[in-house]
Length: 507
Ligand SMILES: [Zn+2]
Image (tube, rainbow, N blue to C red; front, side, top):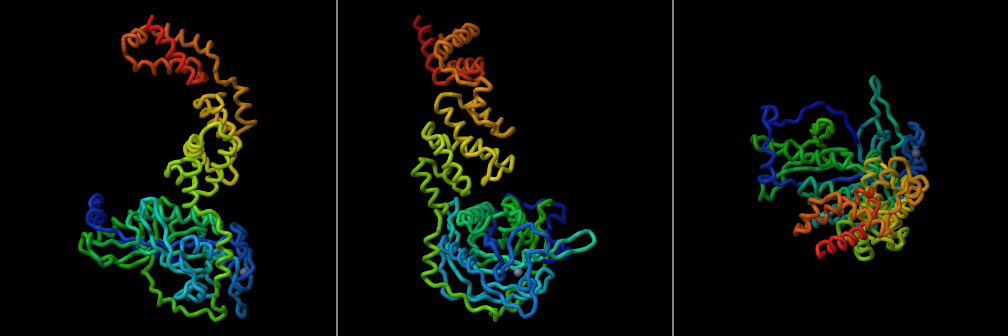
């Protein structure tokens, strides 16, 4: 539900007085308590209670019918696939799935809600409990998850406002955590893991920009050591992981500042303004009794039997945590590399496809280094879509395999990769190597000749080395690679150089 800004400024006494709040000491004195509510749009083809398309980006009000427009006399029909998706989520987090749950009407007025109420689940949600484990080792308990329909969207122009009801009735699972989170970093990590989970379950595309994965954060602070919870504020509709962290940090400092000045935090709903980095009051916080919930009379209670749960358990894919463990065992990766690669199922699939393509020419660890550093950097810089990246696992695999086969050096491979990213992969790595004459020199007599020249043209360093300064060995390696434009096989350069220098020391 969205409400317009009423323009009230939140009080932050230090700012009014022109002082900076004591940011450094706030976390020494106060403990933040954070709970998160996530609205996750289910990837069904049709809406929760009618046959309209859920596709994003259609012409306004084209994906609508009498049911999602709230015409009188029509009846909702529950989308069975949405229930299956919701069950898969509950199974993945280890929640209790209830045999009977009940849809309820939540009444409020807003232009994007044509019925005047939202169909959701209230006191009897389809699942409760479950946990998520964070990178910090902390476990966050989940309170509940329930099924509900989304509202439409208000679009505000310069002179007029418009209502687009394409989104009205789209299925959501709302996932509510216990207030177990204590830092903004853990909050962001929880959301990243939750997004990765629903994406690997293939029940939600996790697109924050299009609003299919939205987060509200409940934040309060209390003096350290105090049992009783402070008054909480809710920040609505945070749409990027970075903004979530920023908004929570700002809100913690704002509340500390209010308490430090002997004032009280007022329970209210806030919006985060990404441009100024500040939260702003939107409305006073409503209580659940304000909505006058009652059981939806047009829908029977939802029954989920054991056989249905079992059928969904059978189709669960490998979940991120299990996949991370498998990557460590099968590919010999560190916990860190495995976590990065399995944070996104498309990235994980990409990695395994590259491993298959190099077919043992280099180690799986080297492939992981390439994917997590060179490749991921270009993915982020160039906003590549991992489902259809311009440089495929075939392209990258061919390139990396050339290092392992001694065809090119790692340095040349990095240069070629940057060129591929810039201009597209073209005919592939080997063709580029041939066209540009980059074949690695592995002919030891040629290497011998270059090294002899390098030693002759640096007599000062040579004398020092022969006098015992072993550190200069690296200098000669560097010079040789430089003269050859990085094309010489580094291992051979090392071997030949050692041989020649040893001979001179003895001779
Ligand atoms: Zn409809």
